[in-house]
Image 1 (cartoon, rainbow, N blue to C red):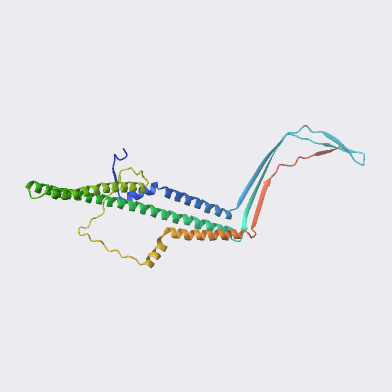
Image 2 (cartoon, helix red, strand yellow; image 1 turned 180 degrees about the vertical axis):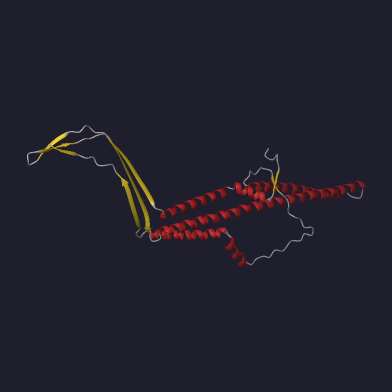
Length: 300
């Protein structure tokens, strides 16, 4: 059974498990990798473009022949052609370098860089969201455990009160109506306990699910929350609305991601507009070719 072994984890351990197993974070990391590759691709616009072409030819011909060509002096030349099996190699290398494009490549690089930063900010926000969900499920499970413990004590106290009335009934100082009246709170407390135990199981399943584990795994949070004997609650200063908005603008990664996405879109638009202008490039090439066959002419 999956519940055969019970595991107790701290909040830090629960968050580490969730970070390792969360598909949302895996998707965010993949998006960041794609954005980084897009930025590297945009940077290649500044690099020289090198192309090479190689060709090998193989010729196999028949034996050569002779031909006498007359001239005005009455003599002539014997033209002898010789063809043999030959192999020729041809290699050509071309280098092309961007000289000026009006800033189009630079704008494309800025757009890709902002997009990559936006994915990093989104990943940070996803980390915060996963940590928040785990912490919420962690403390909800602790609350459910303590509420169940309180309900158990309530049932025990009601049973003690019921036993006291039963003893008074045996002593003749109480009636059966008094006993029935004492049994009613016990029944109500038992019903509340059963409902609370169901809520605790649901909170436990939610806690496991928040970590990316199977909901039926018996994983419990480590209860290290101090209980105040006096019940005093420490006062934390509550920020004003303007202070909360300013803090959100400063600390929320999703807001930073939206800002960088806007900058990326503007740079991409600039790069698209610059495509209407002329681009100046320079190129150089070098190559080798097989020698041209010679024809030999001998006087007749």
